[in-house]
Amino acid sequence: FNSKTSIENATSKTIINQAQLDVNKFKMKGKNGVESRYKKERSKEYTPQINELIKSKTIITSKKIDLDFENNEQVIATYNEKVKVNQDKKSISSEVLNLNFLTNIYTASGNVTFSFEDLTWLKNRDKEYKNVKIKSMVRKKTDLSANSAQFTKRGNQLKLNGNVTIRQLDFKLSCDSFVFDFNKDIITTSGNVIVEKFGIEHLNTSYLIIDIKNETFKTGSSTELSEITIEL
Image 1 (cartoon, rainbow, N blue to C red):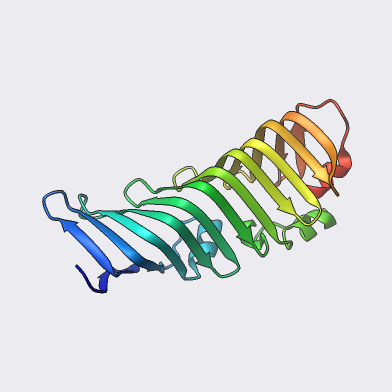
Image 2 (cartoon, rainbow, N blue to C red):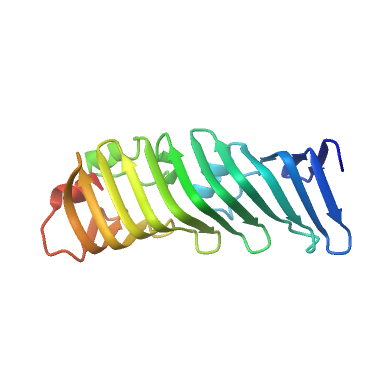
């Protein structure tokens, strides 16, 4: 296909300017101005966070795309080179983005960055935080970076690995591994966990577990750092 080609289904539309289809292997390779638009209806089977995310249209752009049609019901799409994902007040960039709609596992790798204007979409609408600073925290702009990221729909978990950094105004948390369990409202960070405020190190530990639901935390450090708990 040497001209603009559109691939559509009930929930998405992808435009490719140049593509090659391997009929025997049920695979297509596309390049030059790849753009996909996803829009799915909310459902009771989804978690509050997923429903909050899919209420807005998602636009993905990249230089290249690989599409696997071997399973007729669910496509596997892999975006390559300068991948950008944009949604209302949210964005992701990476070198590779794999959307496996067969397993519902979505993986980004290579200079992965997330940017959120606020974190209100993470919160269950029925949850009200007692802590004033936590209420403020979910309204702040937050940037995350890592070597790789993976979201699994079944476990409803976001996992970041390798050189993980989370920034929010004058607050910074770095670690080797970051896991957000949306069902339990628990964040687990491990491996060289360092918390800084205004550029000053406040915590250096092997792990930090943040229970957002109960507004408590556990750490490998014996130091009492209640002020850090409040900020987290």
